[in-house]
Image 1 (cartoon, rainbow, N blue to C red):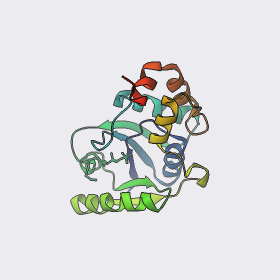
Image 2 (cartoon, rainbow, N blue to C red; image 1 turned 30 degrees about the horizontal axis):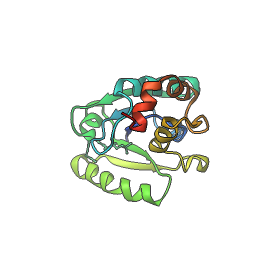
Image 3 (tube, rainbow, N blue to C red; image 1 turned 45 degrees about the horizontal axis):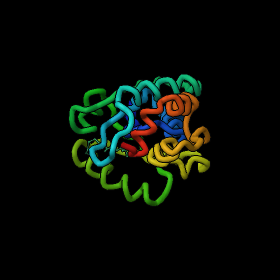
Image 4 (cartoon, rainbow, N blue to C red; image 1 turned 120 degrees about the horizontal axis):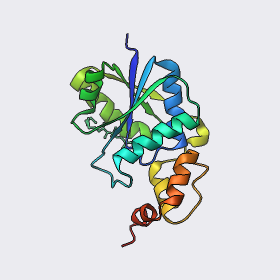
Length: 171
Ligand code: PNS
């Protein structure tokens, strides 16, 4: 039986939907590693170290209980991180059928590579429409993202004009 789970993602930035899944995972597993991974298929906004800090602060701010460690991984396969820390399960949040379609191949490849199982968790439906990419776009164009992100992320995005301009793709 595995006691350690990994919740991986780009978290660019962490949203309330992500936090909901992290809290649910922490309720089920003895130890949870939230792992920020660079996704080469996505244009990154925040540096990985900033994403890690924001997740740590958001977890603390939300008083999420459990043994939770926030880390980043850039050394190769996610399953190698899992093996290194003794994690037997990857946890992913599923908001919609398109998430199932996106996550299923990764889950099967990860299992083929390492026998590590992926568990899909359903966040609160109130977060079903929230994604980091939408948050980046709304924030970049000056919209209010406070309903979608933890307060610490809202403050960060509000205060960082350079990040907003970069996110908008404005030269
Ligand atoms: O939040 P995202 O961008 O959907 O997260 C995807 C992520 C980063 C978890 C995924 O791309 C990943 O696991 N990357 C690590 C590289 C890897 O192990 N790839 C092979 C299995 S899919």
